[in-house]
Image (cartoon, rainbow, N blue to C red; front, side, top):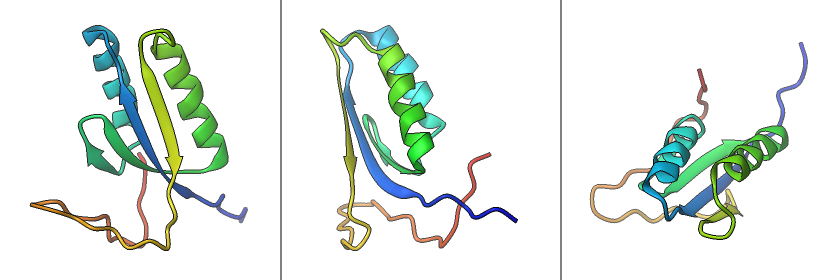
Length: 96
């Protein structure tokens, strides 16, 4: 059985100026996110998946009008939640 590729936690944040592009980016990110809200999403990605996300976003945005940031998060940091927010606590997950 092949080894499972290592996943890293990323935060993807975007600001898309055009409503049509915004809907497309939101729909695209829904397939990758495990948590987040509005235009900030937590994603557990392998290196290949990260490259796919970046390539997909590159195709969807206008680089002169929109912004996309991908931050690698340190998994050792303890999350701080406010209000009704909760963290992803499962030791595993599946993207179907």
